[in-house]
Image 1 (cartoon, rainbow, N blue to C red):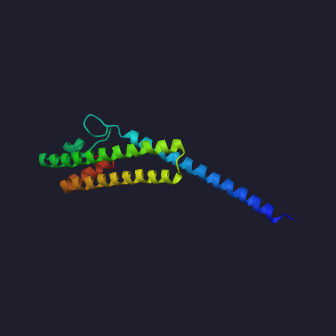
Image 2: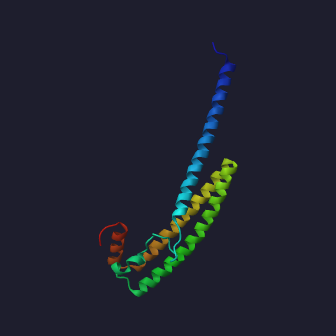
Image 3: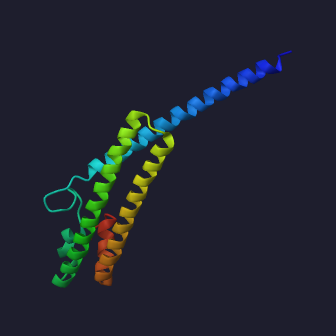
Length: 159
């Protein structure tokens, strides 16, 4: 019969191995998350026009949508406000990402690393919320026909 102390010792060793495995898995997960964050942040390279290169806005389709000058001016105002907020968010996110990478490389406390990763994702969520609010404002400028065409354009349907 196996002694209780041997079983206890085996269980302690197993528990230690499991804890080590979870810590390693957690660090790998955080590294993967930081890589994803970096990929997304590098996609948004700013162009000369203030928007993100390759990103098309509703103003690129003003002829197809038959936007009048008043609509164009309102939409330009909404987009300028959004791009200003977007830049502020992106700057904050990049600052926190740099700190996160530094923390990951220095072996910082996992709780602090997770806290910072959550802050980054919260900022990304807030930015997405700003984008949704801007889209809603722009939608309010359009008439029913324009709204329908704009939806078709966004979904990639022929107009």
